[in-house]
Length: 135
Image 1: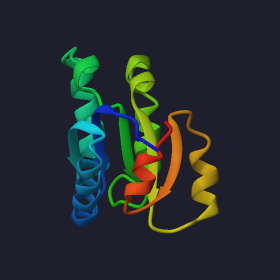
Image 2 (image 1 turned 90 degrees about the vertical axis):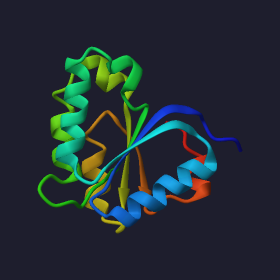
Image 3 (image 1 turned 30 degrees about the horizontal axis):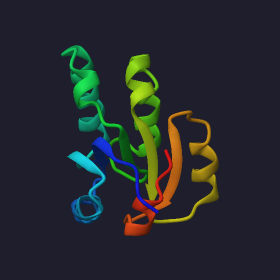
Image 4 (image 1 turned 180 degrees about the vertical axis):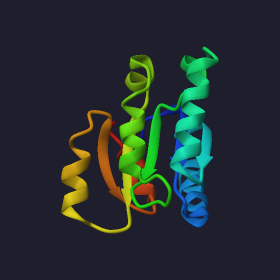
């Protein structure tokens, strides 16, 4: 099954090794022209806000955001709360895939409360999980 093609993908994970592994998996699957990496949710949300202010959002906003749940300072759910405050056009363009290293049913249930969260995956990403993305 061929994976979807995305112009831009964003990785948000405080673990640099996970970010690197996920980046390499996305590159080898050739599903994205651009990959943005953030080692924290705060920098990622600031990036999105800045893109909105610069009025280039439609050109540079990510089509898909791979978001780690468990991060210091701002976790994945706090990111989602801030993401909900962004412009409607941003929320329409960027779909979110939650990434986790544990299978906590509470996290899965909590993620379902956010309309932009389209998928919940174990990390790191695998070739199969990337190729079967349907978001």
